[in-house]
Image: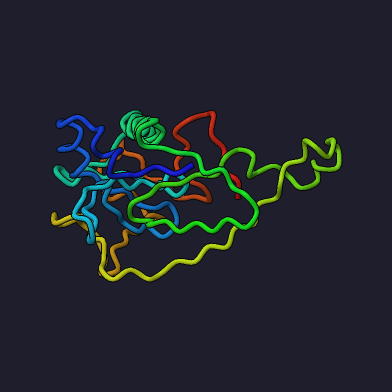
Length: 194
């Protein structure tokens, strides 16, 4: 599934656009800080960016306050709603030999549930119902510019745009500050394969 994140941004209400443009997310392992809304360097369009599997915290830079568990959960649910919208998302039906190139600054993606079917399950199914094994080779090209998370000064932000996510929470104590093997668990229905 692929979602054009500029269209997801367009679906935000005006009030949400103002709020989300002040939000940055912090990854759960290295503490890398990313803006939730950024302007694409080639198109000039605004896009949403939130990588849920590595989400450690979201900071509101307008008041330097971490989102609480309830606020963070609401942002995650809204993001999924936006990128799952039929005007934003499409499913690519893979065929043998397909070659796909995407702009990771413009597209969000997630694997279909069928991509996680274990190869061993093929043996127990009739040949006509066996899932195909999809082998994915990913190449990442180094960007040409830094995606600066904010123009506001974030206390503790290091030159490499990271915060010490494994250290003590330097912001409001009721805010989520999570470090661990997977991202913040915003729903009991999700599981991340490691």
